[in-house]
Image (cartoon, rainbow, N blue to C red):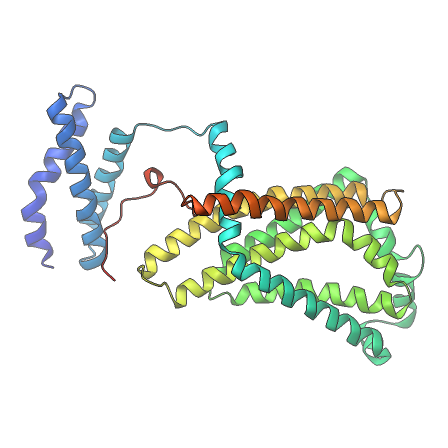
Length: 335
């Protein structure tokens, strides 16, 4: 595309759109219709310039025009409680449900790997010796040792807040860093699985695996599920870089990236619940069966939430991305 010819051919339309925008509310009915038509045309022009003839000056002017026109056409929109409700009942569960083919295998393989690492460490004393001095390992695994006192070593509220912050950061990193072909996600996931496997191995070698599981399961079911969802979605984002499908790579990354950011907010809420359980339920004096029951109930509620609300939203066409009115205009492309 010859940029100079393109600008010369359409400059009058852009100038007219700029004039209509400056007039604000004083437009007649015909002029308002003209503004909408020019806005749609200019959005297409912007897509053409971005894809075929990158020019910072022209692109900057058209971007500003399109943004102003979109605001004039759609009006200023403020977030409301209705938006939050729609996100929690359709957008977030739909995004999690759509990515289930990534995070469910991630969860299964990670759990199996953690169990394998735990068995390997528990069955080989020489591996245990490489992890620490015998007296240190005994201090960790004995009754009242570090594995048990960890959950009650700080006030419940501050401990829950600290756990929530750390886990939310890890989930957000999985979602955001997925764009780097998913490689950082694999490392973050492996680190979590390795730590879990070490705990299983050391406590099983001390004959206290039941105690370890009684401490991990109440909060760990929901917490690990959230991490697996984040990791699976991050891997999906990384694969989008390799294979965007029928979409352009930029459009595919934009769509999946917006969805991932929304999921980071939703998963932060899920991890808040697991953090509360870890801070108040895990170290409590409740019987082990009661604490595990609470963890299983929280996990089942989340999975049911995703299955029912997410499945319904996906069947209705919800993807977890922003609404069409909140996204930038895009030029249609042929497959």
